[in-house]
Image 1 (cartoon, rainbow, N blue to C red):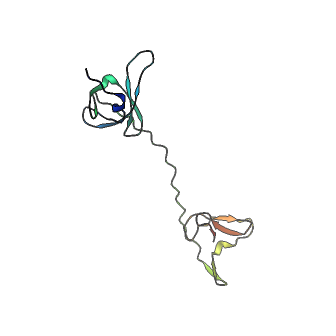
Image 2: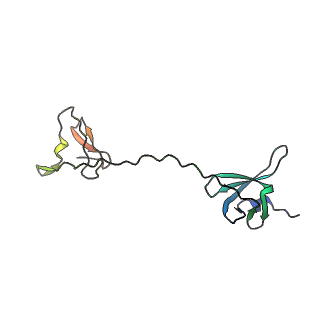
Image 3: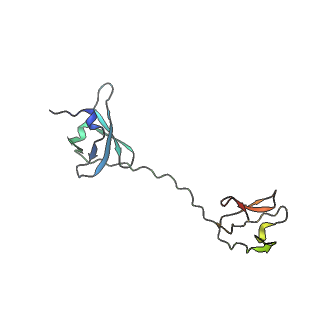
Length: 142
């Protein structure tokens, strides 16, 4: 009967009998009060799989299991909605005193229509204090 030291097992690749990679041994589980020794395997999906030592068919440079282990694929986190700017034609700039400003740069007090940045196409914010549109993406007044 041959034995394998714990230090050699840690880091070994573990394969199913059909040759598919399961993962890498991260640690050995020793049950308290009796039971079967097991392997903690970090799967190729970055999940921890537990396999009992009796499932090991062969161990040398790699570990081969007697029976196929089905890996639990990690749950995909819900994807955040992708920001899609409203596509509208930005106001055409007018020239006033040699400086280009958007037609909507001055609105009467209290009027808050939606506008888009002519540079990046994202929604502008109306800054009441300055009576101007501001693009938080570009970091400038329009």
